Amino acid sequence: MALMLHQLPKSLIPPRALARGWVTALAATLVAASALSMGCQRVLFPENLPRNQFETHDRMRQRYVPLEEPDVFGNPQPALRARLTQPSS
Image (cartoon, rainbow, N blue to C red):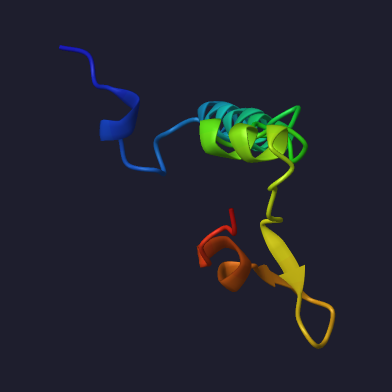
């Protein structure tokens, strides 16, 4: 019965086999890192397209309410008051 490489003590494993393992691990890490760094190529939901049928209806009737408004410091925040108030007829 032949001994497997991982069953041998480290002192009996040839250095070339250890180097091959490190090279394989390094190559696998580089492939995984490059695949993760590529990410998405384009935005999944563009900002200029309507999110649902109600937003399309409001845009057609010129009753569009923006999703965000700037706060006192200029940072964008959700426009909750504008979106939750009842539209005037």
